[in-house]
Image (cartoon, rainbow, N blue to C red):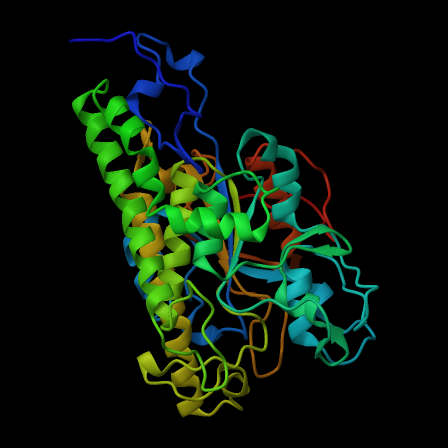
Length: 446
């Protein structure tokens, strides 16, 4: 066996003018002859994917518990990941209930979901809820990565005004909260996200300078091409292949963003499409999932939240034959036709999510896959959308968290188990040791 003495840091970057492109895990990042005990385990990547307006629970919840659970209609796209999936039934978000505050279930569902706290009912600047679990993890681990966390969403974000029965739009639009009064709105524009991940880290440049620099450069990869070629010549065959595949994937993301920017279509007759956002929902979702994948692959961040749609979303899904707005349709009154259309929407969201999982599962990170290294929650703060219920929530956890989660099963919990108990378990598996969070009553065994 031929062994070189070359060793790359896990934090190696390809650098060019205005670019800093992190590398994925390569064999050259593991020192020759290093013992397993001396090699740090790859970090856990944690993701929270939120879907709006409830779920058709009869088509979501498996009837059997344990490892013999059936894959239901909505979960069908996740069949290939059955052994990497933990279905959890019985979790409750009591803080999304009125608790004397009247209407506003959608705003409370979004605001309380990751904070496990009841939001103050206000449409003014005195918003208050709690720190979200993703930000607790990010504050503890963010110093080890370029970005402490990444917040993504497929809708525009508003943090002022009233959006639901007297609740501020900040509650409806943000599931991530850095402090009890500071929401972290999700970013919808792929170009902005791409620049945060791979672009110039100098945020002091004014808008005109950044625009001028953008005109002069064709691609981040073009700027770092010489360094990439030099590095490739020093690597083994396996690492060269990994590097080529990674750079090709970055190039493909750039191409798709450029195509979206050149697309003159509009989202709605009276709204111009912002630069970089694809006109087709599925293309937009895939692009954001691919950016999340790239961020995890390069360890640019280990914490991501993604909002498929904000609560109360009135998006239509003509591409799957559903022309009615999502939120009004979610008040289905148990009508078969409405339930069928809602099931199509729920399944469509899961299908897009499954494509992200497939990329994680197909990508090695040392001696395991990125999916094995990850801990990904998929769920919603509303169960039955017709009645706005917040118990028996639809919750999945996928990935192995470096072997710390027992997957491939359906767990049914005692009635009204706080969802905060799950978040405590996820914190612990991310290396953040806490005994309580929000309205938790203990750490969930997962």
